Amino acid sequence: MAGQGSGGNVIAAICNIFFPGLGQLVQGRILSALIFAIIVVGGYALWFLIIPGVIAAIAHLWSIIDAAKYRSDSRYDRS
Image (cartoon, rainbow, N blue to C red; front, side, top):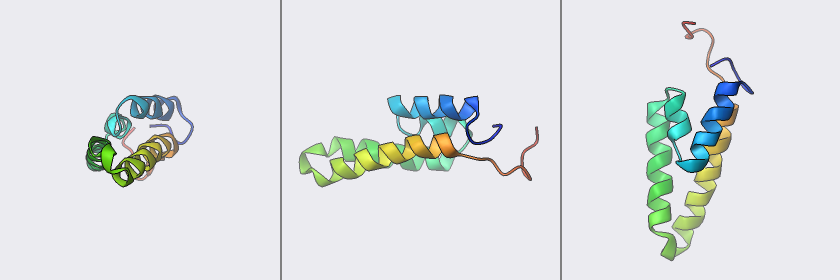
């Protein structure tokens, strides 16, 4: 990724709108993708308890913002 605000981050954020964690997966961050997906999907599945649904909605929004603001560490970037 080129950095914050790059086209790749915009695409990753758009991917997260449709499925939480997909944007992190596109960026190559597998662990954070799994964590976001589990929290959000699990919370939405328990929507009738209200609190897990609210937490899931917050985590979903967080995953979108996280993908949009991601900046890779240039020391480890091989491009």
